[in-house]
Amino acid sequence: MNRVDSADWPDIHEELNSYGCAATPRLLTPAECRRISGLYDDVDRFRSTIDMARYRFGSGQYRYFNRPFPEEITELRSALYPRLLPIARDWAEKMGRAARWPDTLEEWLRMCHDAGQTKPTPILLRYRAEDWNALHRDLYGDLVFPLQVVIGLDEPGVDHTGGEFLMVEQRPRAQSRGMSMLLQQGHGLIFTTRDRPVRSARGWSAAPMRHGVSTVRSGIRHTLGLVFHDAA
Image (cartoon, rainbow, N blue to C red; front, side, top):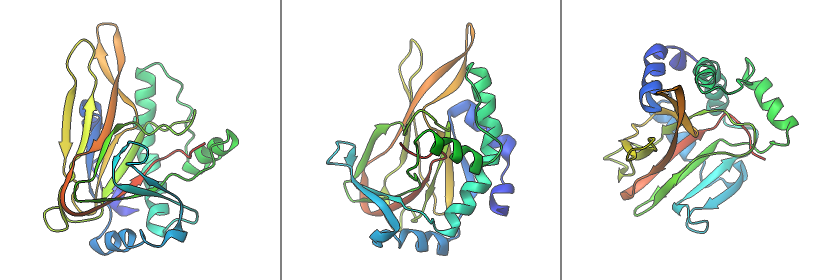
């Protein structure tokens, strides 16, 4: 996909190294955003629906897509994976972990399925006024890809207010560091699934990171979540 390839990936890599997250240029047009968010009420497109309040995840709702995915999701995942792969391997080397991810998304998902992780993980999220998402990490099984992408589907200040994307980094022997980002319509944010490498006195260590969403003040906020490992 040209929109993915045209991004400044060296700059994105540097941003991820520094903060554990990095914004992308526009990945979806406004029309594509509306088409995807409009699928939310077509329940047959999804394998499950999660009520956040029920599980004390916050307040709001999200749905996991079932296969086959909308074309935009399939194309984005396939285009993003090889761009994120060198970053994932770089981080694994720094943190002394095995970089077991193969060159293609298809091979990686086959490994997930062979390990019993067969449930698709692309997510469509809906937040209404007063909804929010607690800080968490998205770990669905033993096989985990360390980066994921969230894409804003609505226009901030028009369709909703509030609902900033939040990240909190746990720093060794120090107070946690928080960041907030407002997702623009069609633009993505790449962020770490669980941690990022940080320099330490002994070389590199892992800084745990969690993400969430601040309270939506008004309107409705939809986002598309692209996770690159399937769930158990």
